[in-house]
Image 1 (cartoon, rainbow over the protein chains, first blue to last red):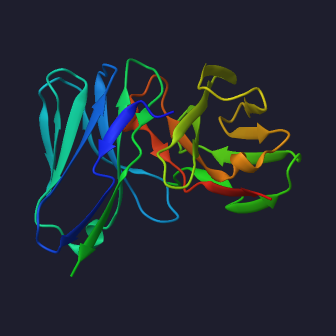
Image 2 (image 1 turned 180 degrees about the vertical axis):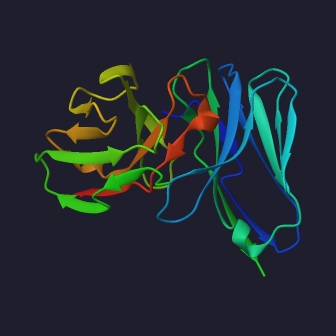
Length: 110
Length: 114
């Protein structure tokens, strides 16, 4: 089963609002990643983090790698309708496979 | 530059049957990973192939097997299908030793077992 706990499971927000979601793990990872998946498509990488404490931005997206290496969060500022989708966190240790969270489903109301 | 190509996009199989899914990696990539994504869940790692060998394997039974060809393309085979095998099967390619940010996912194959 999933090793990562991702919350919240779903969010319904108004266009223009900020969004925050997070992911915790019982395992230590040396890489945290955030993906977005649109219906009928595979996940697309948004942000990659590979150092504890690292804070990285990609446009309106900001993500942080937790100090304990067991957690990460993703913030989206000033949401727009095209932000709708499912957001997944994923952790990776060394060259091992990625472990994914169960996802956060984001709905943005115009 | 083509990304990851998976075929078929959809298929329906009967319990007990066997299925083969195919993946062509992104140009320049030599490693292929397969994931199973059940409805409402995140992708679950099945296995990874590099140099035509299975390099890592997740917690999946032996009914799930794979192959990688000299041109780096890959197949996922599932024998004795169960209803619970119904899912989206995703292929991700990367360069050897690539970290998670080096993975490119295909659009997946939607398998329905009836």
